[in-house]
Amino acid sequence: MSKQELGDELDIGMRSPHGLALKIEYLDNDEGVGRVKLPYSDMLVGDPDTGVPHGGVITTMLDTASGKAVKVKLVDMGEFSIATLDLRIDYMRPAEPGADLFAQAECYKTTKNVAFVKGIAWHDDIEEPIATSVGTFMIGTVNKPRK
Amino acid sequence: MKLLSELHDAGEGKNLSLLLSKIPYTKFLGINVRTAGSLLITELKFQEKLIGNPVLPAIHGGVLGAFLEVTAVLQILYDSSSQSLPKTIDISIDYLRSARPVDLFGRAIVARQGRRVANVRCEIWQDDVNRPIALSHGHFLLKEDA
Image (cartoon, rainbow over all chains, first blue to last red):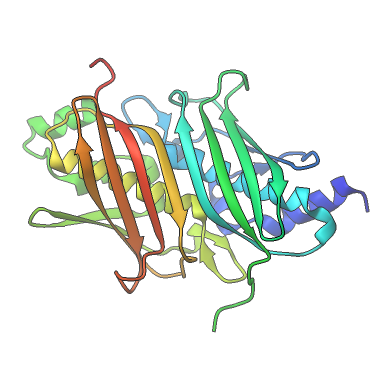
């Protein structure tokens, strides 16, 4: 199985009820880079006067893309769990009503325990970002049903 | 914001539940709010569709971020008579423990409110207020034209 195929497999494993409810789509990953798309829909609207999607939607996309980036970066580790330690989002400009959203994140460094990730969200031009993010993730957290 | 001005004109300027019911995304998540004097407590009813990790199971980190952001914005609106929705400049979220599949609650403090920017700190918890699930601090722009 190629790294790409393994990445795709991980994507399937990562699909969550919330991602499905929002209709987040998983795009192709590169080494250390995770990508997602979110088609515009009315339920995303945070400002009914303008139809602009809520900031929380962007947070969810960047969190998801960042998690994917870590998984893809460490694809050789096989199956492991991660947990977001912190995530900072900077909003460069409001999202636009009616336009699809894209986000990608790059895991640029990992240590034994921690992964460092930068992310960006945009509509159709990555040079005109809606938001950027910086996050850290714990690697190899417990992932089994709670008692 | 037209919606906020209309609520103000109808004497419902502080009716934040009514405001939340008119915002599609907060309706989708199931966020509500109650007040006790000067205190504002936000509530996020657990629903299956909020799950981010089905194995644990745990609520999605993005949902927690969104809930923190909504909590911050509502506190700004509650503390002021702003008729426009504050715009998030930045928000930093610390995830302390995973959120179990039960209801969440949130509260916020406006640490500083200037003319243009408010600095807001939030925390969210589940059964035990002394065991927060996540914390945030962020900056919010109060008026675009100011």
